[in-house]
Length: 420
Image (cartoon, rainbow, N blue to C red; front, side):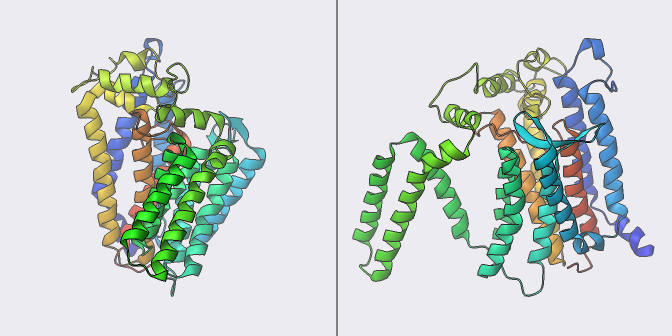
């Protein structure tokens, strides 16, 4: 009992405070985004901001429950939680109703559950459990394969649900693996693959392959003429040429039509301000119109007159930009950065390998969500439909990110103990 009380007293107050501030900003931003004079009460449960208040209350209760559970529970039952969420994903794939093209929602009656949101922290826990096991080294080939499988199972199931945005979040776990010793070459390979993919959409493929061949020849010309260098040059050319030539298949067969359209708009190949480019264009107008100080709370015309679709969910950041201007958007980004830095600081002070890995996992997830969500509202990233943590409207998102963070806060309170 004394140990339980000590752990609760040892919770990171800075992390909790940042969480509370972000949740409050999200709530009033949702209110501003859907404000209607006929439903002016901020506690009106018939409106999204009233329902979000209920989800916030439920999240606070769940956070408290997470904090009073013995910290060792999460490490011991990581695989059980992971398996349960995988079964939920399979169930949603088979029986969930389709919402906006994605079969990702289980209708429970009084609310719709999105298992893909909970798969993020469950995968994070499973990875932390596996990588913190005795005699497990990320440098070993077997470890890389098993880690990839742990990530690939939920990723694949979510892709089958046509929820590409949520699936892409799982790529962020590469940062966790890098911290645990994965070679930086994997990050470089991922970066250059992305660059080649984009170039292959902009430059004729045989022309691009010719350029790659020329670069490879120059490397061979100015390097030592050894068998190793010849093999490296040939290998790099074959791999890069293969990536370029496979882009058409991935682009046309893997990506859906609306995703291809959004990428074309982002790359400037198409201009569709009334179609696929409408959301982003209106979002940028809203953020730009806020200026330095913003138009003021509830004074945003772009949001008030519903010019920005999904302005309380995926595009909540544009509401902040229009009402509070540069100062508001800078403050929100600064709060996220402070939270991420605090999580990484807390992760590095752990004696428990499990807790450290889990901390880097949640930092990776939150970073990816923030970077992509804000990027898509200002036209720097394709619109893939992922929420802004703690700000966007949605019960599953609010609950899952709360659990994600507060499990780490609970584990951090046990930092003088070793959890495996």
